[in-house]
Image (tube, rainbow, N blue to C red; front, side, top):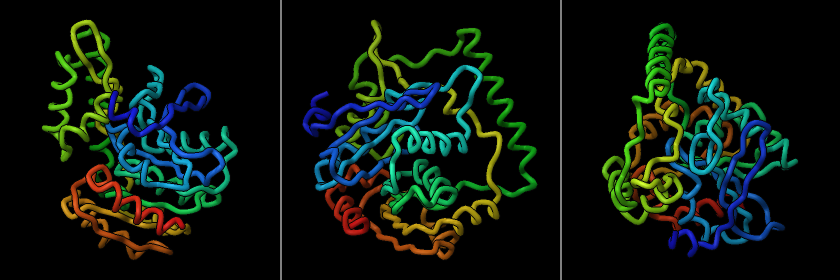
Length: 292
């Protein structure tokens, strides 16, 4: 893990009752804390390029449950969006954290937005990286979402039980890295950071660590009205940083959600969905100016 070592980050872990959250930490423990939250199927290593530039801060980037080195949820549990909000609440309670600054990418941005709306006393500021608002659907689509979600769960559980579903094995770590490059906006070196933390070596090659249930179809979606209510209830300062080649979801979300925030500003940088890995110095400068 040569790239990881160069960043001089340390491994950390947090016991949250039935789960253990792992993560990476950087900086002096006496400095003000910044919590970094990654996106779907990424892990804490997505923030490694930022760490050297977030000077004067104690930065902790966690692996969400089912991602990176963190525990998978129990066999009778699933990966509901709202449960991630509870994971954050437990993280605060276990560590007795005061108000802190959050930097969150993609799915992490949606989770932290809901958390900031419900628990403003725990959040000092929120920086969203290529993420704004929530994935939503029309109320009349609720039954169809429930059906698809339950059938997805049933199919996945049946495959796991019959041992018919096996994770793809990559003969070399480079094969796994190239596979990640092909389905993302990452180059080889950026993907390497995520894959080294997100894979595990077996006798016959490398497989993904991530819980297969993360790919289950969600059985529910917020309605647009519910999504807007969450955003309207965020009273802490919010900054959006997005890539000029990032998700179209963010471009559309700027029109839909930006006017609803109490205290909001946005900045466009060069790059795609993972622009914070492509342009870490510019991204960090914007983060520090905002939280400073």
